[in-house]
Length: 293
Length: 253
Image (cartoon, rainbow over all chains, first blue to last red; front, top):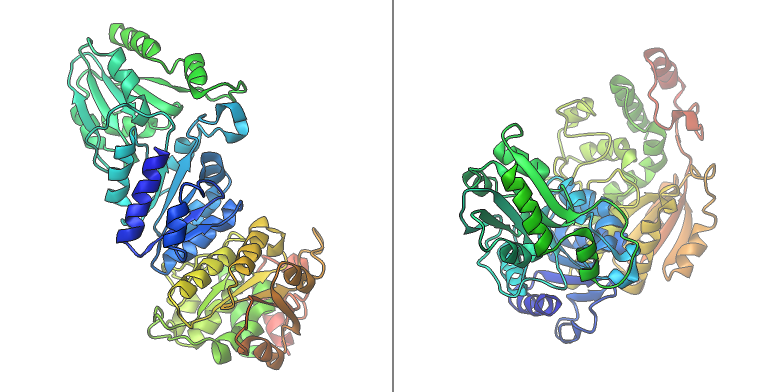
């Protein structure tokens, strides 16, 4: 997904002279051609995320479209107030593109984890949140939204799905229709969901835009009133949207996601996924329990 | 300036809101900026050729409001609605409501980095406009201020002037020391002035910086012009009662 990120940005730099990129001293080598070609619109801002986001807001107020890029915790958690006040409160547009997702940097430990990003940003009014599941989906979703004048967070993941889906910004895709339950699959967990449920009579909704959240598609595809949310970050970030869509009294909601604890082991992201049950086997198990309740 | 001081104190007293001493601390600087320095267009406040000003220490908003209204950015009567429910003029300035306000400030350490971004944008656009911002010495506690100082120096933003309202309000917490030396050490030009002397303010702000961003350390008195409030932290976010207002207005120089 990182290579696609570079490709997409290079392409947009070419077509839109308003785009300015600010790197938090990562990805500099990957963007070496862009640095040569667009020296006045490519900046390695340095390791100072708060002022970088503030500076980006200043650029935005002058008509540029900033892209700020660094590792997820440093952009979302370190500079949260700048995203909230400098962008969202002031109605300024900009794009925040992270790498690392929940624990792609598993071996580096909890300082580089960020499973809280979606839940945190869900609490910032006006913030848009995009979780692509495949590099091509990032390209489509970025191209569809980067000029819309809003602050948008793109959560890039090291390991996505093998194949892209047809995605549209702000819309969920209905990948399968069934009767016994509805699964909300977010971005890169889709492949595990599909393999876990291939022979089960359920609906699968694929969400890549988490804000705005597509209320209508869920409302129209939840006849069973049983919902399993499979999400690759702290569980529960979508609960408000789901309840708003289908009502609190009539629905049973279960989650498979990241538990709200520090995952202090190292290894690889898949080790954490295995440990917390973000696996096809566990999805199948949990779905079975939900259906049989 | 006395009528501005009267207005600021009276408005704050009427609403029971406002940071009066902070507004009085920067009032002279704001007046010289808008009267003699800034190239602005009150009836076309987003004119592309304008100079940009950001009051990063947004709690001094009352000072900005009396000056903006005096210069015709909005109807003078609006200032009497300060901090009322439907007012465009709140305790901190809002760029989406107030003509002439470039950034919504309030949380310290936010407006200055935005000013750096605007200065960089103007350089990219090859604009001759300048960017001015006022920060406080208390605001200089914020790490984002020094991040912004680094960025502005690195990118040689010689269209950026940062005025530091050095009224020593932070001394009780952190002594920020010799700010002129600190800015110089970060790669800025700096100078020190009496922040209540209009000629000194004018002379420090009128020249275009040559090669670097400029820090103007303005030595000021918090609450300047209102003896009972001068350097008295009890008044930081307090408004006079009706009786106090009568006494204070009588006592103004």
